Length: 82
Image (cartoon, rainbow, N blue to C red; front, top):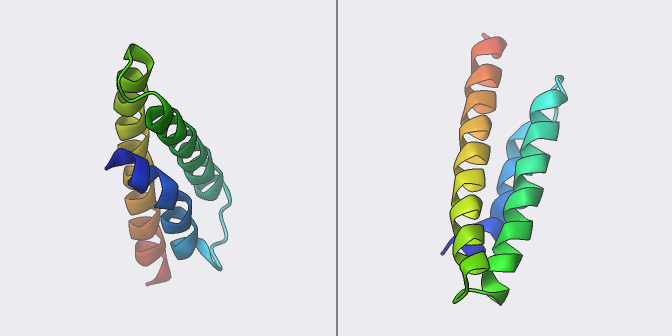
């Protein structure tokens, strides 16, 4: 499940930022999306080994952190428009 979420994570992170002025939330989101995708690729190659379990755990944490940054940025943009 994490490998599929890691594969679509960059698309989910890009969508709300079209037309946003501050660039640092975009940079953080791209970093976590990239790291999530890399760990997702590692977890698909070695799901049975120790590296696969570690990558799966780190992948889940990075996706959670990226999702929280995305929610923070969306609430920040909604709060700044009024």
